[in-house]
Amino acid sequence: MAKQNKVSRKVQNKGNGNYKIDKGNGPDEVDVDIDLHGANNYEVDKLETDTLPKTIVDQDGNSVSIRWFNNFSIKENNKYIKKKYTVKIDQLQAKLGGGKLVIYSDTHTPPLYYYDGTINGDYFDLDDGDPATGGSP
Image (spheres, one colour):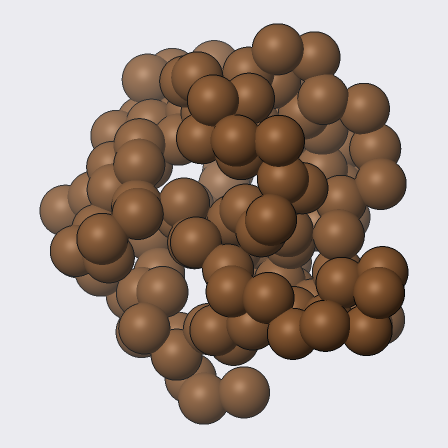
């Protein structure tokens, strides 16, 4: 995958491990809130969505399009974190429109996959410091 460039001035540190990552220029991008469950020395960056995969293969073997909501990275001591944190996307269920949440991460195998955890309203948990989040039919 091509290098995912940082987008400056899009991350707000709200304190105590809470960050707001503003949407970028992608047509489907939205603001995202993350809760890292306590203050620490985190480096949180907004990343571009332009170079992310445009499609994913569904359970029937069909290639379906992805609408990317946001892309960010979280590092601690210059390494992607591997600890549980919570992501909030306002009106997530409506944005998914009956589709599935899609995650892309260079640190996951496979890098592009359907989220298999629980979505509680607008909230879901991740444990990967290099996620892009999106939706697919």
